[in-house]
Length: 254
Image (tube, rainbow, N blue to C red):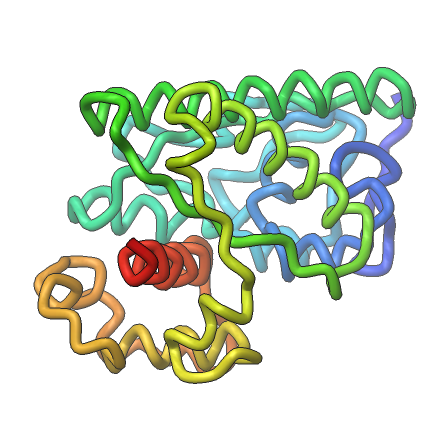
C-alpha cells in the first residue's frame, strides 16, 4: 500500500473536504484531520500538522495502518488536542457531548456522495433522538442560523446538505411552525453588530453584553472568563457561542 504524506498545501481528494487544502481543514475542522489519520491507513501528515492537532507521543500509530478506536477516547485517558476542550468541558459538566465518527471514506465520487447522504441522515437522526431524550413532549422550539451565502468551497456545500437533512428531521419531529431560521446578521446584531466576526462574538459572550444572569451562572461562561480569544477560538467554543446568540434570537422572537 502506497503511503501519502500530506503537507499544509495538499488536498485530500476525498470526503466532505475533498477539495480543500489541509491548512483550510486545520482552520475549519481540525478534528477531521484526526479522523483521517486514524481511519485512513494510506494517509499521514508531516510532523508540524500532527503536532498542531495533538497527534504526538502515544497518539502516533504506525503507517500505513489505521486505528479508529483512537479517534475518541471515552475511558478517561488523555485525548488528542483537537478534542481536549470538548473533554475538559464535558468532564466539568459544562458541556453535554455525544461523540460521533463520520463514515465518509470512499475516494470515488459516486459512492462518496452516497456515503455523505447516508451520514447526513444518520447524524441528523441521532441529534433529534438526543433532543427527544432531553426535552419531553412535542412542544419544542428549535432555532438554526441560516446559511452564509458569502461562503465558498466544497465544505460549504456539504454543510448545506447536512443542515438540510437536519431541518427535515426537525420538521418531522416538531413541525415546521416550531422551527425558526435566523439570518446570520440578525444573530450577530445581538452581540453588537451585524457583521461581527467570531472574535467579536466571543468577546461579547465573555462580557455578557445581554446582561444575562442565567448565562453568568453557567460553568461554561465562567470557564471562558480570562481566556484570550483574540487570535484563535478553539473548537467547540465558537460554535457554542453562536448557538447561545441563536437561542437569544429565538427567545426575542417569541
